[in-house]
Image (spheres, rainbow, N blue to C red):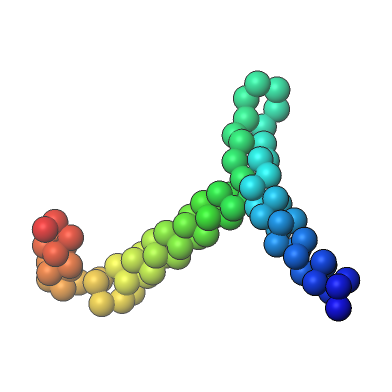
Length: 80
C-alpha cells in the first residue's frame, strides 16, 4: 500500500517535469526553445487549420460553393 502510494505520488511530478522541460530545435545560436506542451499545441493548431483549408478548397472546387452565386452569402458574412 505504501509503495503504491509513493509511486502514484511521484508520477504526476515526473509528467509535469517532462511537459515543462525546455526543448530547443536549431543549431548554435539559432534555434527555437519551447516546452513539449507548446510544440504539441502549435502542431495541433496547424493541423486544425490545414484540415479547415482542405475543406474550404473542396467546397469551392466540387461542393456547395462552386457556383459564384452561392458564395455571395458566405463572403458577405465573412466580411462583417
